[in-house]
Image: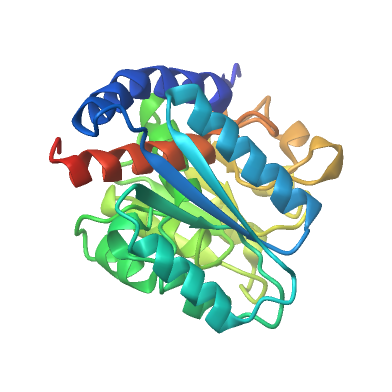
Length: 283
């Protein structure tokens, strides 16, 4: 079987090219001022710093600005909320990203929820998740939104398909399950306490690895002809799924790297452009 490669890197480039003229229209409404995505990094985690830099580079490629906010590692919950509040009140900031994870002394969920819903371009607030779950308008979590766009772009059937999501994080597994449900999939969410996990995964027409453990999902768990989405990334370029054991049998798969990762950033930038358009009355 010749498997379809779900190339997120090339799709992300296409999305960015489509965003450039939209950003220009926003700038015209703002007298030449660029839309702004504010990224907040608390502490000095090297991986998080790299992610923030990548998002800033993506902003530049489409003509937006990136406002990088760096806070010390001993920042308190209230101090972080105060900074978020100032960004909420800044009319020139259209999107706010709080880089996960934050230091342990901070109540991350409380800070996520402090982001104004109209600027929650990373889809991390409880209100945004609730709206999404009810089929109302909201910016979905960036990685799940990127996965849905990837599946649709490559014509992967969704309606009536059985999808199994392995992982239940509030910014990946849970929102992705809701998005798949909204696309008329039959969805099962699995986790570390799921009984007979291999048997559950073998039912899936669409398998999503979102558990955060290297090659936790084995290739022989996945049935022939399934679509395989690997949302994990670990050292040595491996994900949450044993892709090497399934790429010759599956209908489609997202490579690691180059699959889901670029789509996460593309979704974040898209949401920020949408928020800017709404702020200036374009959409």
